[in-house]
Length: 284
Image (cartoon, rainbow, N blue to C red; front, side):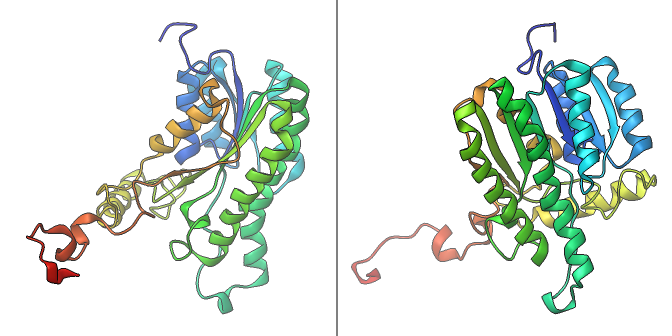
């Protein structure tokens, strides 16, 4: 790609959880489209190496999203280094507390909500003044189809992701008059190292890949499109929301799930639905 052709040419973004999974794929896509990106992540070795791979288009900042000063520092890195902030993507997350509601401790609840919801709040809080002053910008957050429909994910994760959707919609109303958009992305099952029960810093790549391949096979069976999502599927949506192509899109929950929440795959529907047969007046 030559200079000037990218869909994000000249733009600056900050992405949390950017060193692995969806965040890494999005960072790569943004940079390929002409964007400069602050990589904000807990994984210092991995994040630093990733930024070095990307060269002058990227900068790494250690960031635990439950620490407000670290989120503020990541946003300041974008404005100090490149003079503006066109997009923020609050993507950092984990599964968090699992199991029956009665087994979840207060500490597990707090840790889960802090990462999944408070972390988004800090990104919005500290990017809002910059984007308001610019009178432009795109705020994006990773929610989940769990936030739209119960029974897909764990209890607290489901509640937190519903909160992310609501927070982005509320922020969209506040920021609309300044030309700033706020949207959530709602992925379905995505093949990342977290799906394999590993983080990128746990270096047994062969075992992680084996677990991922197994998860793809098993979870793909429940998908109408017969495959799980890949990080690039979400990166594509984030690219659209960060680009000028989405200038009149705000307050939305963009579902990217291969049809998961629509219903059971056609191949698993009862034969009365899927097999053609002559109709009869007695059918009624």
